[in-house]
Amino acid sequence: MTVATAGELRVTNPATLETVGVVDVVRPTEVGSLAAAARAAQAGWGEAAAGERRALLRRLTEVVVDRSDEIADVVVAETAKPRVEAFTSEIFPALDALAWLAAEAPKLLAPERVRFGRPHLRHKRGRLVYEPLGVIGIVSPWNFPFAIPFTQVAYAVAAGNGVVLKPSELTPLSGALVGSLFAAAGAPRGLVQVAQGEGDVGAAIAASGVDKVVFTGSAATGRQVALAAAEQLVPVTLELGGKDPMLVLDDADLARAVDGALWSSFTNCGQVCSGVERIYVESALYEPFLEELSRRARELELGTDIGPLISEAQRERVASLVADAVARGARVHAGGATPARAGWFYEPTVLSGVDADARLQHEETFGPVVTVDRVAGEAAAIGAANDSEFALGASVWTRDPARAERVASRLRAGSVWHNDHAYSYAAAGASWGGRGGSGYGRTHSKHGLYALVNVKFADRDRGRVGVPWWFPYDEQAAGAFKGALETIYGTRAAARAGSVWRNRDSLRALLRRYRR
Image (cartoon, rainbow, N blue to C red):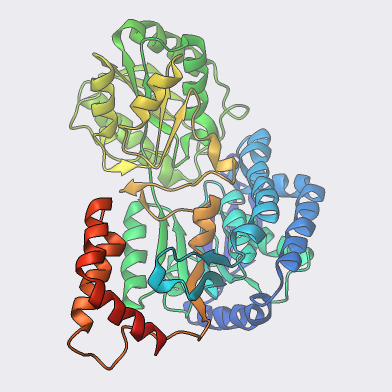
């Protein structure tokens, strides 16, 4: 949690409620100067050779590995998540992104030849050139305060861009650390700027002169960011909320499914955009699955397995969603209460029988709460999973890989996992993003990299032939081109041959236009 005072953010550990740090903030009017400084540094960096960019990524890898304990200390101090999660869900994804970018970005961003197979364009030589956009504005969240901003900055820098990073005001220490690590690795001075502050600083990003905004956060704020960016004609990538479904089919490995559900629902205290919030279980496994998941949830230890929610306001919201569901008839199988201890903890909660009109069925919970519903078959599970405005991720649990692929093809989601959930955020080669209320655009993978460049087509003309579609026009021109299109693009061989004979005079005229 963070308390804002004049000119600074005071950070409070959400487990102990002790102050763990203070950072200075910038005024919204100062964001433009940060963007200008990043642009000045980017002018040279954008011209850097692929080998120079790769070298920075490799130096950065060494810095992150060497300072991994420091990174974990900072993350744990301001989120109070279990230390193991600081390594698995924060530092590992960052390092995998660096390794993948160092290996793949030079190849993916190299000029790409465009081949013209049609005879009327054989004198052309085209290529796609991938140029940096310029300066990327990144607005990042508090739930993964190191991994998300670090990987997004790494992708932007690997593509030759400068960055203005606005970390969450709830976790500014991790955001500051991102900037210092790039500096320690030898990034050009000023290339990565960190703008600390509250929502008004984030809102100033779109109007600061950046060339793109990458936003990760709630759907409500994402809509505001998209509107502000649209006024400036600045493109955006939006990675918004989720309410991921887990489909447990009747041939699933019960023990593995329970293990997966326990972690996917409660890791990071449920504060995961792609965390499991809805579980649909076929009737054959419903009772044993619900019983075992509830038992295991009751055994999770607060402070060791489960950290606190990020703030008192977040805990109050989660508690209100559970209370609303219970008031409408939901049954509590585990948790459902606030423990009597310091910090913003909430018990891992398993519910069944949640009414269709309950807020919990439709709103993103972002807490340690999961609902379990019985479904009468695969089709019903798919229908229930798709009945949400969110479409970030989903998982299918079955022993049959072919069945998993079939179900995945029918799920509305940005990612679908088989017998696992959400692991691919830490696999940089896999794309990340959603649909509908979960946003649009992609981070990670080649698609995330291409989203941070301008794709320019450029060609080279051999200059030894005429251009037949230039002036002057004459009476034979239209007939010549009609005959040419029938010959070049006709789909039946006999028709093409007949077209050549019928249009022979026009085609001769077209050839003469090439030679002039």
